[in-house]
Image (tube, rainbow, N blue to C red; front, top):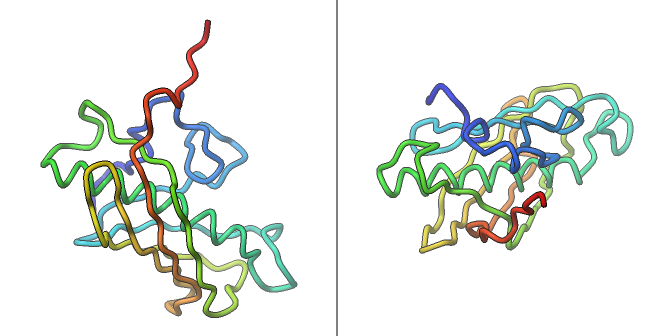
Length: 158
C-alpha cells in the first residue's frame, strides 16, 4: 500500500470537499490508497450518521462511494501514465454519475472498508466500482463515473 493517500496530493484550493477534503474539519476526510490492484479507504461512522437506531444513513454511504470513486479515478490516471501522484499536470476528478445499490443495512459504530476497482479508463473519464464492507460483509456497491475536472472549476480570488 502506498504511504500517502491521493487526497493529500490535492492542492489546497481543491481540498475542502465534505467527503475527502483534508482541509474540511467537519467532513469525512477519507483517504484512498492502492492495495494491490484495488483501491482502499476506511471510515468509521459516528453515532450521528444514523438512519434508524443502529444503522448508517444511506446518504453517508453514497458520499463515501462518491469520494472514494473520484480518488480511485485520480490514482488510476497516475498509474496509467506511469507517474507518481502529485506530479504535474495534476489529476483531479468530479463525479459525472453515481449509482448506489444498498444490499444490507450498514451497522453504525464499526469501521467500513471501501474497495475500488477500475472498470474503464478512457481519456478524461474513469469508471469504477466501489464496494462497502462492514465486518467483512458487503453492505453496498456503487458505480462512479468520474471526469477530469475542468480548469475553470477553480475559482480565482480577485
